[in-house]
Length: 348
Image 1 (tube, helix red, strand yellow):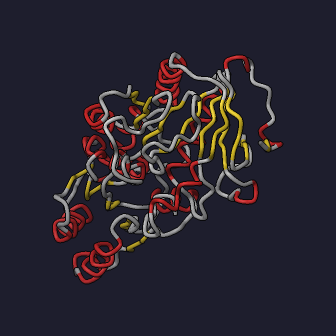
Image 2: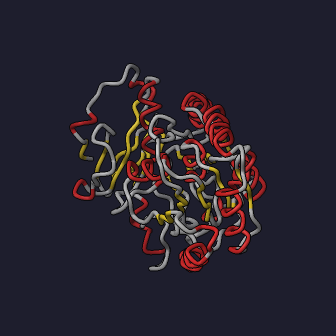
Image 3: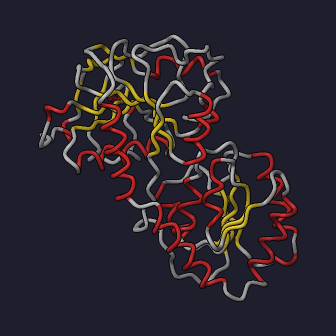
């Protein structure tokens, strides 16, 4: 175990044991790993010793802030009082990353739960069995029904309203992320560009950009197109709402709760013409566009606060610590990424 010097902060109550989040230093920003860093910060602020664990110090990436405390190594010791938090995707039936240790699977996308292979009845076959943390009510309910033998806690995602906020602009802009639906996104871009109703509207695809650049783009966007696919939540939609965007598009399944916002419209899946027509309507025919944008921001920031996430984390942590655990040596789940196949992009 090689601790990062920036993270060497003595917690108020280290006797409680550590909370170690196994993450990945991806080349481009990963929303899932960013959420883990938010959890680490919230837990530290409330007096817990929380860390982000990466397999190799050389993999540290610039988009993870330097003040996020880190551990490095392909393996690390886990104490009897510690809690190991693991991502859902590289979870392989019967391949326990830390036999005997107290574990949680932080499931940020229930559609990826069995990405690493066919489960058995006792999935994942670890000892002791892990608890589950989910990021939306839909995801919690799906996981509880799918894996009734494992306890599930809801830890909702927070939305950073300081970073994601409306900006003054004299342009009309429509933006989207093409990553989850690249083929449909290329078709949609041509549909929008060819529509005379959208002449003069700036069309922006957000591809491999920093979090700050995303915030700057969304803050000056009139309409955000949601191209979610097999989502548990849909953080880009929540951040677009906080930025004052009107939202139209696909909820991705687990993200349907976000489309309860007053200025968000869900479209049936794979209907790009409906998206195009709704975008044109929102650009030209909505008289109360500015009030709807303000209402979207209020709606999301009232519901997805850091305080709510912190309180849910405390409750989930308390429940997880009641489960059995003993000292172990943990293998970082990066050891099993190859089992997902070359085309899997959750951590790309």
